[in-house]
Length: 284
Image (cartoon, rainbow, N blue to C red; front, top):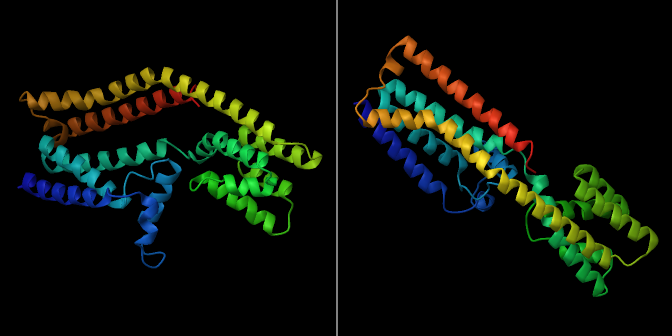
């Protein structure tokens, strides 16, 4: 009976996931009704955008529930109703933990977009455009850098100079790359020098830094893979043992088994977080 209920719930969750996947979450605004009617989706969407995962689902809450239902079904197959509850909670928290562990990647995306942006600015300046016009023409069509440049112009339209607006941007985005770019542009505006060659040189330096960061990330890939193997090994062992005929019901039906299961999962999570922090400390 429990397995049948779990299968029905899993099918409902899977259907929710299929509805959630067709398009990026940024396109939700065209389908939504009045503001405030999708508070859960709005909150989850904001987290996905910050984590650079905005193309994962159209309806994030449905995808999240579907993943939790899938975990619940697996838990039910291993340990009846208690297993369903544990699997549901673990899967739901696991998805949320993965998104949260990525943090806010908006500053990183801004820095990544700077080299191409500076090259476009340099090209516009060589064509005879003013710096104000070059910044406007070179802004990307979307993404956090486009929003930042739009905010710079909004500040300038309120009566501040372009240099002051750029300084405000550097305050909001205190990354060294943004600060260096703002300083370079401010000096050019103050002295009236040609900024096209400076923009090209800055773009080249930023590309070299990005290439170095990619090499460091590649070297850390093996460590990340080892962390995942160690973290997922207990779950894989449980699945293999169940397939071989061993019953994991003792983990859900006895106090000692439940305590061992909860303690093991807690230690597993602590180990994963610890290894993630070690690897993240040496990666950009």
